[in-house]
Length: 270
Ligand SMILES: NC(=O)C1=CN([C@@H]2O[C@H](COP(=O)(O)OP(=O)(O)OC[C@H]3O[C@@H](n4cnc5c(N)ncnc54)[C@H](O)[C@@H]3O)[C@@H](O)[C@H]2O)C=CC1
Ligand SMILES: O=C([O-])CC(=O)C(=O)O
Image (cartoon, rainbow, N blue to C red; front, side):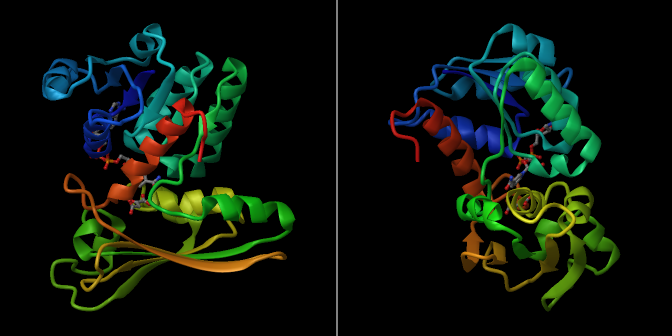
């Protein structure tokens, strides 16, 4: 597989590490799409991996190399800037920054681009689990989904949580946001992609209730949710290890992307 990767931050770098290990899916070549002026530095930084890695600065250059699959891990702005063109070119794209789909105009553009190009938008489970069951249950009638995202205070740095509390001195669990998944995803683009994922799989962006919590005692990034439907009820709580490179992003997100790549190449997909 020739893999295209949009963004070269925490997720992309760890993904390349995982793809370089023995037994990794058979990715034989990688092209990184990075910000203008960053290609030389990115190609040098990625030079240590046991994979041929090139770096380009435009979607056109990425598309010209005809990757078999593209993974977007460049935040909501990266989705807006590059993913429509990649889809229009007929290249299936794993969109990690799923919260970008909370912008209706962008979601419509992405779907139209995918249809025009004959490509698919793949939304990975990311840092959460149970998306398979939730998406299945949503065909059975109405589903009710309530989600709580709990992270240590430092994971909320640089977000609107700072307008509600002093994250440095916070000494108790604080619910600083209550609203819909659409509001959460747009106000917390680096922290509430999970809310959007649950919403898109289940009750929708406006009907999925979300609480975001800063908790100094949180053992990691916690995603907890309850589902009620006609055929099954369940609750789930996941304690995720934060990434070394970005406390906002759980390591399991990167393994979820790896799973999408593995399933594209495997005889048995699971
Ligand atoms: N679906 C899920 O469960 C999760 C989704 N995410 C999403 O993944 C994104 C990436 O996460 P990390 O790698 O940890 O963040 P990061 O901040 O370490 O890396 C993002 C990289 O994208 C680059 N970038 C931004 N705009 C770009 C553009 N227009 N073109 C090319 N590169 C661009 C940045 O320079 C940066 O290097 C997050 O912003 C978040 O939206 C993160 C965690 C979980
Ligand atoms: O990685 C996580 O724990 C979840 C996350 O940041 C998000 O939902 O955007």
